[in-house]
Length: 181
Image 1 (cartoon, rainbow, N blue to C red):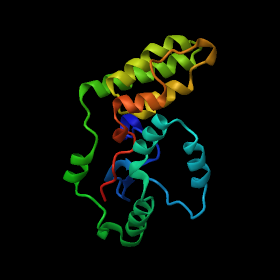
Image 2: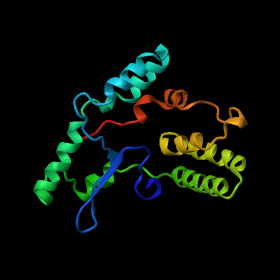
Image 3: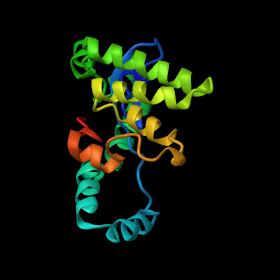
Image 4: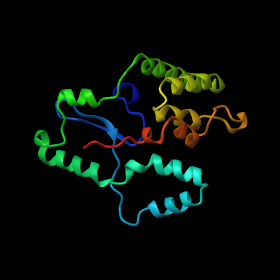
């Protein structure tokens, strides 16, 4: 999904119409939260973190405040089809799509190689390629998340920073970019 559509985090979504045309490019796609859902539990856990970590998480999640907005737009599209006010023209889709400079393609190649090495039984050899993928495409949080999830704890610290520190270094606003509906 990253290579084909530019998805760099979860939850992201793409709208593709019945004819196979992308009518909204990859963008943050939160589901609405039910009143009294697990947010209270997460808030309690986050409140226990040191202040620096709470600030990073608050910055990362700042654009998650109105989770009903995306669902309302999807419902509008389902109800109104091609007349939905949320559909974008071809030019708008291209304009809003993630830029694809050569570094993004090279990052994808390193990421694919890292995954191949890991699956083939060479997980430590995968590490430099995961690192290079993230260095070349630092706002692709899927790359960094995957790399961190595949580290064997017995190796010690193989990446320079943990996820929160990396988000802080790259920019909290890159984690969940604002939704433009």
